[in-house]
Length: 401
Image 1 (tube, rainbow, N blue to C red):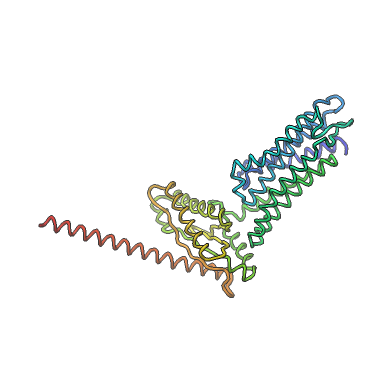
Image 2: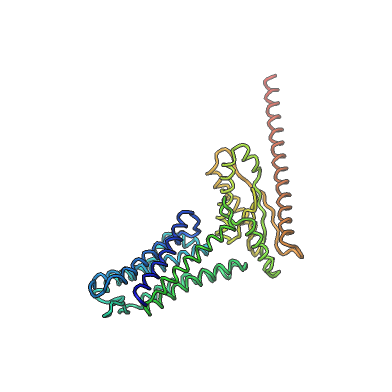
């Protein structure tokens, strides 16, 4: 490969990654925090590799040693960033949101940094041949071991997600994330063996694919709450309806409607109404983390949850947990009013029922529960009024005496 061709490839890859990174920062549409880190590190790697090509080895031997040391350090760091990008895509929040997990998974990088820094003196990780190309050092196998460790770390939650979720879309996401990361790791091993640009090329392709996927996801996302929208919900429900009767018997569709939402808008303003909707969405998202539910806002103050439960009691526990989360968040966010909701649920294993009919059943159950709740409130209000009147009458009689 000629010098100019290598530079052209590096420039093209740099331009692609820079465009993606700039667009992501400008639009703020990224759904994984580690994706930006991947872009930044990849840009740095492309600049670094270009410097290695442009600077003659015979004249700047020491400079090449330093550049290759940094190159190996940044290479293992980008694998680390890809690991968390994939984990965030799989919604493994116990790892991605834990600083302890990030530190623990980052510890294997420390020996790579140390051995890379010591390689100019002891050839621990690599050494340079007469042409300035790096070849395997004494502890080269450790680099392979770290890559294998990260692949296994990702394989565990991917397998769990694939088995746990009966929905084909979730299984596809799990396989997609693992395949993409595995391809990147394998390209690293191949690049280390053959000393070519496959690794940065695969990384650039992966960045473009993932960014395209983010933009496609925007079409299926509700702009206000960040939940899935009505179109995505209908596609998801249709795919679930294709499951077997045994699987559908453990799947529940829950229809949620915010109580007196019009009054919140009229009395406190539409801005506060939007905050109320986002509060409900945040509470649903917290429940979704624990129960791996599908969450969507299908219009106005209407939300739906599709969840898997072995027993109906587990489904009821999830709804009680949602009420608790909403109560806690509403108490912090609002001083003058509280938020509540009415729910209606149905099991998906209803004979000969279509997706629209199931939604109507859940909606009907929700409306019945809302009316019962409203009747109880009216009864309680009437009871309190009657009690206050009796107390007032007794006070008046006592004053008359």
